[in-house]
Image (cartoon, rainbow, N blue to C red):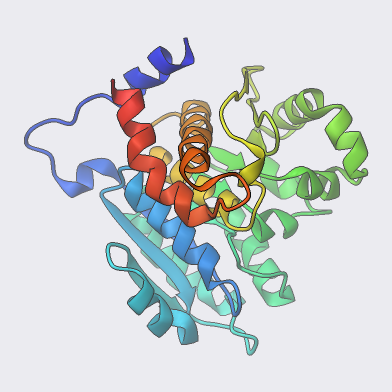
Length: 287
């Protein structure tokens, strides 16, 4: 059973543990109107076992996130006039990466042209396991060869619309051939594809395929994908191999959503309810 396989990945912690034993995740996220994405991804990383989490955020939004976040640290970065991450942030990010175990790139960063250029310049020099999500994915539409040159483990987490834009096809074509298209893209570009939706698919370049059975329609709401992104990055930062990290996160994310739906109903389910249900999901897997 999938639970037994995944349980082995999250073994008991050694008694003389140090926070640095469990990774330091850098979350690059947020812009005006989308600070919630930054909060959700960062908090999900904290709740999924990371020793340290730092949120890289446009500088003018830093005071907001200092109040909103408690466990995660913040890294104010150069911003555009629209208060999204600027190309000028590249140097500071590169310096900070020396102390980082994994990166979550994209939640709520916007489609600002400068911000998209930052993503395009950052990906070729990133040498840490990375999750590319949301507008991080949109930044490579029409430029997917950037992914081929990535120097470490890379996981992309598109929903059907984002994946359709990547492939330059329509959403109906994606939904009709989800497993095949995800597997083909993974092999062609050497990345792990997490194609979100009903029965989320995880596909790897070496032809491994996982079709998730947890989750429910109540999770089709804003912010739920940001939680998943932060969870995957946390597992990468703890040294879990990319396919297993994605598989584990997708399963637990859906399971937390199922617990939350039982309490809140599918109609009232929020991304923060998934965050609050993560301990229950982790407990079930631990048993």
